[in-house]
Image 1: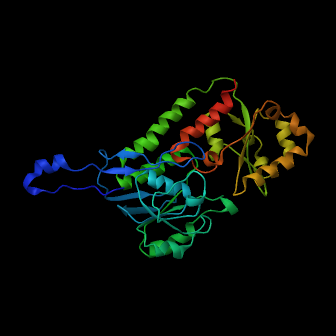
Image 2 (image 1 turned 120 degrees about the vertical axis):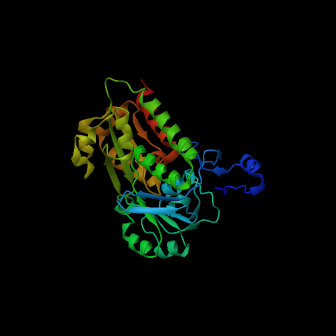
Image 3 (image 1 turned 30 degrees about the horizontal axis):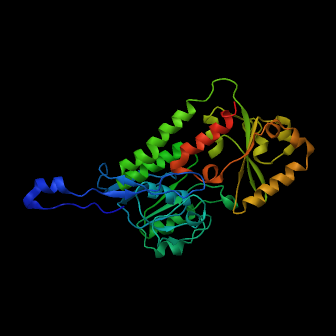
Length: 337
């Protein structure tokens, strides 16, 4: 975000107030799944000069930052969200540059390792004035928490904040904090408020009767997991009136059972490939299911409602594309009616 140019001609105050140049900020906006998020020009007439901001992060820590310019984001979705809020980055975790869907504006941004194993020395070497980390767990390897790095960062006088984003409401809270820090209320309106309006419009179209049943499967090269309504995609389906059968059969959340899926016979089966090798992930599931002749008898399979979802929208956080994620699920659920 370009610096606000302050016209300070004391002898001609009226002209100075009228003639100050407008600030322009670039924020990557959602375009379409698997496409790079572009950075349209955002008018800065509503921007306020940022100053010290104190907030409580998702780990319960009180954090104060003052117009940070050397920011390190240790999760790809957080890096994208920080730029959507008008912030600048000097360091990111590897997934911010490698995963489909993200575009980092600084061509010289440094990497600080995988988000599951952030390199503390690499972070320190960038001399950051703010570090954004995840307090969540359950990523690749089963644990993406970066909480054990806090003491070293705080001890070095570096503000660090932890966030956990699962639902759109979480993203909304994250972006409120980020845009408070950057002073870009206009970007909150653009990348959050307008997205919320679009989501509300989608949800308003959900039929009041005959809710469909569904299961959400995350598949990877080592196996398959079932998602409850407490997950990212599960929460969206709940908002869209879906009865998630995993909520009624909690044992599925620990141990995937093909027999249990066949017995429940959901109307829809949504599959999200996970990991760097999507083909291997899908092949693992196909081999496990095709081996059972009863799989072909499932209503979802017979009716063309065995659907693979785009991981850039339903596994990674969609950020400014949350509305597109809701719309995609809605179209699959109700567009066939």
